[in-house]
Length: 166
Length: 103
Image (cartoon, rainbow over all chains, first blue to last red; front, side, top):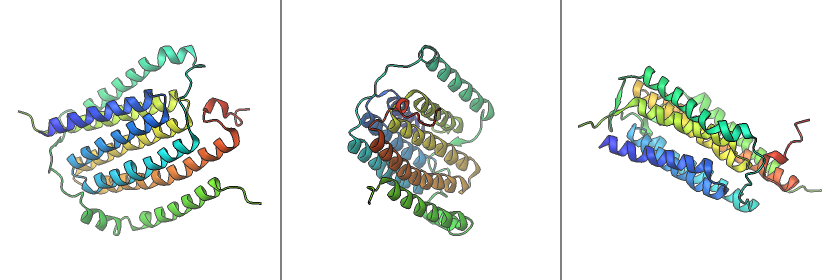
């Protein structure tokens, strides 16, 4: 059951990620990226990260991707052109990528040969209660610092995107 | 009958997603798609964090992934504002045309 769940959503994630890379129109890439994030949320649930699954859907698939779609529509971004790519990139790009992937997969399999098996319900410490206790206990200072970071980001975004006022 | 998923499958999926994000970052021309590739890489790393957190039966990986999400949200806001400004000044989204720092 867990294997079926993992396989289905891993395949959806990989197909959507490939679609993000190969689509020429930015809006198609954005919709595919939402698919990746949604399937990753299901995998988080499988790993017992309930709070993160909810945050993934709300923050990533909700807020960030809506921001992306807004900007794509605001700028009326069209399909990108394909010319001007060097011959080395066209010939070597995909084989090098596959080789890089193969090496990474090989090392992962070597480093974790018969390690932990993941099954649903194997780790139940990822709920809101545990996250909240950690966040306002051991991680209080980083949490407060992120609030300052977000304040700076808001100010920066406003300063960058406003109209010039004389 | 196998009902448990090996942990290395999650890590391999994370590696695949990260490599695809790198590919998008390197091969694409549209500045918006490059930005989306960065988000894809951040998501892949988050999956690794949560997987290792499962292995160690500890909450710390979840917190790291949470902070990555927060920083990604801030980064998206500022980055998209920068993209808006670039488009306003240059009327293009193609990174090959934005080369004033090259010389």
